[in-house]
Length: 600
Image (cartoon, rainbow, N blue to C red; front, side, top):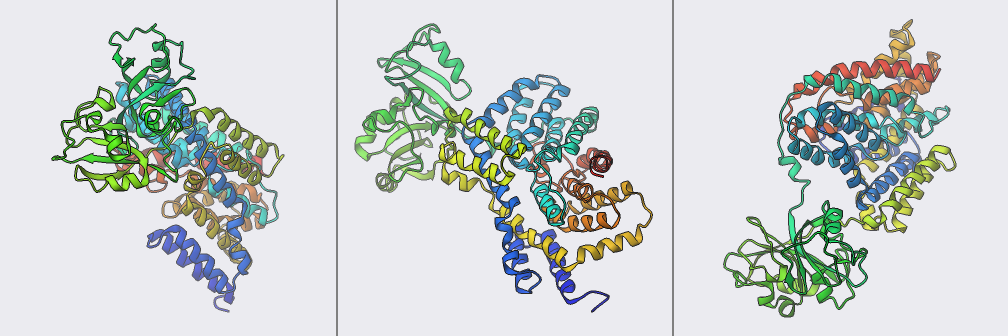
């Protein structure tokens, strides 16, 4: 015994302190630190080996993985794009209206998907809104957006991994766990308070348009290609104007050809017919999204695939897509694709052209190639490997395009809503409801299995699985009760509300150097032990700690979403303090009051 501590407690405290130091210094990745925690606890015998690795099969880890896959399904089917369009339309030209619409939409989305994903999706949308509308400044919208993304996670149990971890600790302590929307009793008022606060205090934020450099990473360069109206197209018999207005969000039509003759008039009422061709300008994502369901097929594929292929099969075993840059002294310069007889000569098809300076306005086959042009090539892997040796190309680059399956958007939305309903009504446990939804997304091909795996943030998954044993070990060794006793000794006679405020602010300050999940795992067991000794609700105590970790906006380093908007908003460190400190004070008071009110 040393200072009243037994051997297990001393070993655990050493592991805990070492973990905190590694988390703060970021000398190692958080997932690596989490695995070291698992190994240290099991090798020292603090907890059993099966308990140390139990985090990987725990409810929090399963739910987090499932939610990532569900979010990927919504993204792959274009549901998130539609939401972005709605936000753009509803934002209007006024600053107050824009803040209200953006914060409300972001908060709701963050309740069911990862808040960082929502922030990344909304960033270019907000920058575009500010660019198109005079009087709107990115710096006035981005901090409210990031704030809503964090606050929105408090609306549901699955909104933040920290809440899942807190619920896990709560159930281990013998208390009744939280249902899907229980936390929303506190989270709803927090979102409302944050929204009102950001509208009233917007004058604190600077007025500047920010820097678009970071946003550029979300943009995809425009590619010129051709679409042909297939025999079974839904567009046959419909007007040209119908096509233009329906597809303008996905691509812009440059020219309309009929029987190889350009229809210069482009009469809006003119009806489409089989074989009509459109020269369009689109993005890499859209280029890989043409699957032919609506009867608009990439002309190059129809011509060179024997009528069997209607889409760019990026992940196929045989076919690939590459980008080839034309060298300055290439033999192709000054010639068109048809003059080169590209397919017959090389066995690959040119499905699109990108030009750095100037526009490509003619058909792909008729475009005169210039130095620096980038050709999008599609064909067998063997043929592409062979052509890569040709001196006419400066370099070959991978083609990155995420196919959007808009024909499955309603199905993906239905799967998501069904998963939420099953979890909310208790028909299925939350982890089972969301994992069922994730599998439904994969089986219905709303998202490819490869993309489903890629969508799961392994770092977050491993970190959650790794820190759960830390909480178990704290309880098993009695360190939580030991620290809670020390707190009670120094705060004897304090009101429960005051004590919860102390816990909230300890959590809020600690999360500036640790993640909200790590902060929760360290403080939640202590909060539960304290609550039982002080005869207050463990649920109220643990929620206060967790929300303190999630909803503290003191610095830009407290949340990754704040770091994402730092440069685009042109913010300084002090901007976050000016608006974040008063907001965190308000949120702490609301959280402590409502937690004690709902859980007595």
